[in-house]
Length: 304
Ligand code: SF4
Ligand code: SF4
Image (cartoon, rainbow, N blue to C red):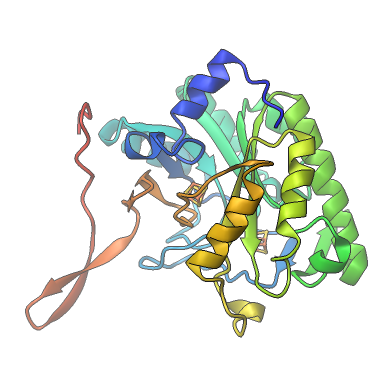
């Protein structure tokens, strides 16, 4: 495995709850839901912008403007100083929304030392790379489910690029080409790259180890094999068992470090990975249930 990481980046990784399993108990992340639109359609995607009690990617209680995102960040960091990473992860694709760049600019101006992170489908990664690098984004996730277009075309139904709609194999080829180009640029520029791969039994399960090998060649730092959430066009698919996912992670581990503690967070999640403070949890009450926001975690050294 290639590893060529600066000391500063090593420290940032050690304080990033998704990149370091140890960091997840001490450091938190804040997702800012400023990016509603998306330029591709994945068959497992069901986005919701007004949802308070569901916990999964693509869900947020509301979409924020960049200014609102800055205000939210200021409020949350004041109360939760253990949060070390500010990320934009949807609810759509961050790079398909100009608000992403304006939000990063505002946050960087006010919080120059915080780690900025982004999660993208990668279609616009190489095209918008200079803007992203100018925002000082240091950690980046690309969701890459296949590098074989025959497999990819079964996972997405369309790609919208350069004012044109692509479908079938053409869409799959274009997405893969842009993802690989973008990952290469990001690694070259010194960003620490994570790949999210959705494990879809019967579609890409036999292909994921080859994908890990390919990512190793590109210098990807870590890979996160996530179980399919069966919804939208994939509502009738059977998600993998925990054992099936573990077996694939074990088979990929010789090629790329595996993230095994992902919580499949909402697009507006914040706090520790194991305690998302954005989710309203049902509280048992006599005569029924009521929704409430769970309280902040007790953290040693926190000023909370
Ligand atoms: Fe949904 Fe993300 Fe796929 Fe876009 S890239 S369709 S937001 S899962
Ligand atoms: Fe980290 Fe996974 Fe949550 Fe993304 S979805 S912030 S990788 S735990």
